[in-house]
Image (cartoon, rainbow, N blue to C red; front, side, top):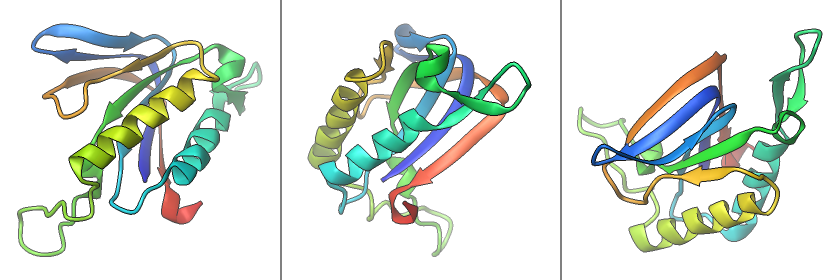
Length: 148
């Protein structure tokens, strides 16, 4: 499982020109699910993401977590995080989770996040989405379950 976490001042996602999710300060997270991911892996990833202390305190040090600053989450499914570009110029997505399984994991992650974060917004699995954000920093972190 892979999460690309961007600390944002604001972010939104639109489908067919209509805003379906928007947050102010918080994390915009692209979520990639592989064919070997489990709910146990998702639990670890969610715990790590929510606990990240990457917001600045009064001294300008990154000591504050999402809950400390009252931040929100915008969660976007992104199977292309498992693109394999080793051969040729056309990426292969063979390691990405099958759509039905990946959607179940995406829904599970959203539900787990809602247990501890007040504002959890989302995209729509498999939809053509337009994501806009103001990256704060910029500050972007890649969490990969293979490295936890």
